[in-house]
Image 1 (tube, rainbow over the protein chains, first blue to last red):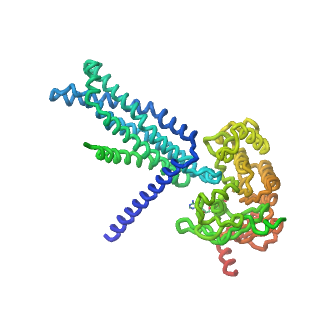
Image 2 (cartoon, each protein chain N blue to C red):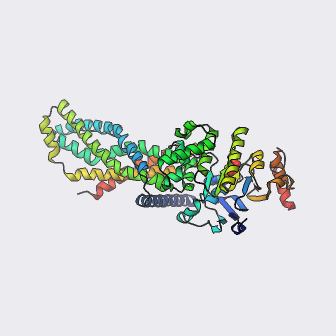
Image 3 (cartoon, rainbow over the protein chains, first blue to last red):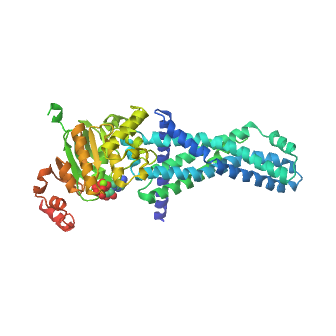
Length: 257
Length: 267
Ligand SMILES: Nc1ncnc2c1ncn2[C@@H]1O[C@H](COP(=O)(O)OP(=O)(O)OP(=O)(O)O)[C@@H](O)[C@H]1O
Ligand SMILES: [Mg+2]
């Protein structure tokens, strides 16, 4: 029994310690994002990787989600003759919720994994040490551009994803459910508020930051050898996905009302 | 020699390093004079690489003191170390070239990052260094993954000397190379020491290479320096562990734990 309590104690201490380490890591990374020198080329490379090359994945995900959402909400609302709210339901769900969360989860799988693998490989092959000896701060050269790129690119991605998602709903609404195109569009815009879109974009920025943070943190602290890098990659994806879902609730609750 | 050389370039005293309760370095004391070439030898896993990494501050020592040009390095923050770091050039045991950059940007990494050179000038300088290292000219536009192990070692050497550092650290620069390429690398190291007037610390398992490049040899065993002396006296150390290592005998105190403890008991 005592053993059991001791184990719980140990586990919670470990947990707190890792939160502490992560916080210190994040603080250092933010600090070195603000102070010069700035590595513009690194930033561009990351923005291209996160923003541009994630477009197909995010576009496909939101397109089909918008389409299925239109079908499902039609089925539901038809039961109490509220079919004409389909357009509104689609646009609100996509901008406030599905766009950011789905894009976040897809990018977490794609970018979180590749960041952890790349930085982890650099760790186990001494490239990070080499950077240090060549008078370049690894935090500034590797981590800062990724954090900044993640935070800046996800909102852009999500904005594009939102439009594609709404388009998906429109296609199903007009071509499968027989809505009048003009009516569907005006219904889409009628109840949409700027705050719905900005909420989604704020979420996206938070998710982008978290994805890059977890990718960099796990890669940076990767264990030794190929196995260490493998673990780092898995941990980065799992932890950033969970953090996305938790922070999604927190941000929504914060702006609720 | 001038008065500045009176104090050693690098002086390590009572260096201790523990990893999760396992003491890798127990008591390392070493001093290297400016312009000297010191070779560190010792069996695999005895802590040679860890010693060099402590010297650079990449690993924080658990205790002891490291002075470079009389300046204490242990306990300094990264910003305080910055000026001293510039004096160092290092090659890592496994190359550690930057995968995402072409060879010429690898070689000229520090000057490029510091904004000391234009890209055009850096490319020309890299070409010059690569040719000196016996690499073909077209290599400088390739990426590290496209090069053989020996070529990567040469590029790493080029990166270490590109900024003309005062202190060169080489972690097994000739391991895994054929004897001829190994000889070429040895000459490059000798040349760098002579031409740049640099101080060199080289880790090596290759006794032929040690004889060629070392002024002084230090042997680490069980976390301590068990012998340190001029390279020419390596064969007359009178210490069985050193004898075994130098001659590469499979049988002896290094491979027979019992004998080592007996030695200690005697001492
Ligand atoms: N970051 C680390 N964490 C834990 N242990 C480490 C770490 N780095 C090195 N060690 C341990 O320290 C010991 C010495 O390692 P080191 O790399 O210095 O050996 P070495 O003398 O360079 O050997 P080799 O000749 O094989 O390169 C090893 O037992 C190794 O497991
Ligand atoms: Mg080593």
